[in-house]
Image 1 (cartoon, rainbow, N blue to C red):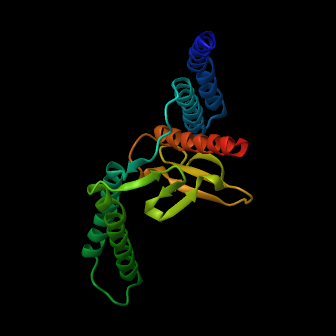
Image 2 (image 1 turned 90 degrees about the vertical axis):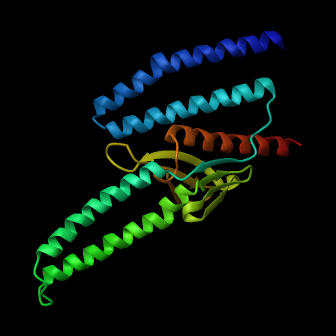
Length: 226
């Protein structure tokens, strides 16, 4: 048993070395040749997360550590404030053009500016109510329990046993905004969980989610054997 544990330990070190020196540069260079930086970024994060998950599983099995009960992630205050500032700047431009323009009820352009102003102001109120206030109060945006994945901003609760796969996707070309794509069993439907709402590194969030899914599958395997 001791010799086997020692062999597994050195195998783990070898795989980490192979990943950092061989696989990871290959992923980045392949994405660069394809000319798609967003895909390169997401693939790099994906493989990094998978190896982190493997290390977590190895350590837990090696030292017989208990599974986590509940893990939580807060609302992303920094991202919300930045989005609100950009939106407020857009609103200031509209307001300037509206004030500078003579009031004319018969002018279609004036009404278009009024509609835009109202829409942007409503969106700012939405950001404050749904994202900034919960972030200021340090509320939980994502909750991982032994039975469910809970995304509170959209009131989404997904039982782990109904999930067939979880992947990261880029929400824009640069790959700066990402989301989790949750595939469900026996259906082609997927559920989107925007990581922009959640505080923390996207790779760490994905690693935690995949680890919970892994623990659930391991628990199902033990119960079916019993």
